[in-house]
Length: 243
Image 1 (tube, rainbow, N blue to C red):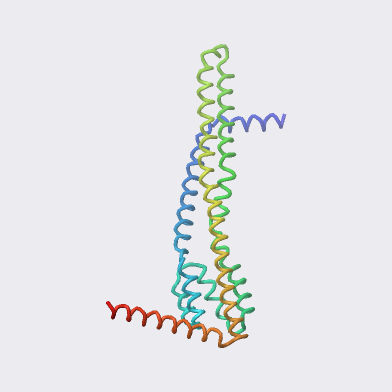
Image 2: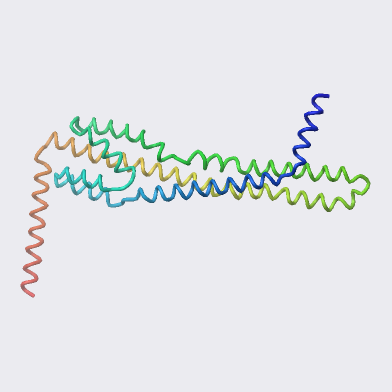
């Protein structure tokens, strides 16, 4: 008897209709869109394709202060992590590498912000829509049972109710697809950012290791670069004088 009361109470809840499920999906769609926009703007600020080239040129010229300035002037979490790691440069390449790993762990929650939300919406929105459809079907058959002998006339209303209930499943899938796409894209951007931090950290560590083993290596390279530039300038001036 107690079990029957539970079923009756649940049936009363189901007969309230599935409209609230559609409103819930509408709210989730706005939340998902807001998270996608925020992440797009965030990762757009991280883009600095010229950072590696500027950093490489400064290190090859043995101009470590210029390398630090390039990192400090670059926006985004990649440069931020490397600037923080370079505070330990006196400890050598291994200290910088360890500090970079520590900074990577610090910035990872910032990179992954919103990822769990998008994944949750993408995975569960279809089930929420399906739940709304089930409620709508229960309501439709309940109306058919209440019609009594006039079931033929009520059948059209029941079919219409089932069709409306199926809309909830469609809306759930519609909400889930963009969330799943954004989830996958964000995962790729996170991997790209972590890869850039690791690659630039290795470049800095390679400079520090070479600096310890062959202190004059970069000065020689910088001198060769200046000589090459002087020769190119002389050739250009000579050509201009002939003309």
